[in-house]
Length: 327
Ligand SMILES: O=C(O)CCC(=O)C(=O)O
Ligand SMILES: [Fe+2]
Image (cartoon, rainbow, N blue to C red):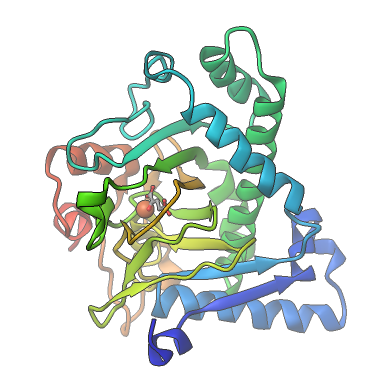
């Protein structure tokens, strides 16, 4: 990555700010100002880039958990193909996906509400009928932590627009989540010379995504200026990405960046996982009045997330959001 591009990489170090995960009440006095300043940085990153690298204190997501989830993912993807195929879901992008001709190097699972212990247990018992409590616990803990982080980032975004009090609780009540686990195989030598495609360019359709990965890089994002940038995610950091649903809800103020995975000369598997926050079934995404004014005329009609996803699945196109809900 060139120095110019690098200078633009938004890295936000939440440090102990991560303690908001344990209750905003703890942030008082002088911390209040720091908190507000950090909220503005989050907003700027989401407006200008639509993504940022999030660093936070070890106490928020300990190194041991980060290591355990990578071990757990390897064990999951090492299961026999016929076992993995037992994970099915009527929802798009949730069933086990492997050997897809468009993205042959990628395999993935989507686990609905993995932050709820019963859901994590149900998934684990399909993969390991004899039980695998440590996998279950690790997946449940990681998804719970990433869900809390998602809530925190959302809260900061709402705070930065001055509408936290009014919308935060209802936003949470109207959200659900999917924990996705992904593996990218090492490209065969013939494929490896250039850059093998791991995941095709797309915007996330949900509201907010937080990703964690092993040390194999490969995530690229398209800047607003139209250049692909290869991200170097520092060890132990997370990538926050704004999705179409939040872009629409924010009346287009936040950017939902196109991104992809490319495997360049990699020598080992890439593992990533992410918590995808999304609007609950039936919930209508509607721009709040506070985000509409003469400088920001209404850009999107109200719509339901599931209807948008159904539209996207049958009309895969780059500008799905504009075509489906744009005014
Ligand atoms: O594997 C990654 O780092 C990116 C995954 C991704 O963009 C997605 O699942 O939507
Ligand atoms: Fe994505």
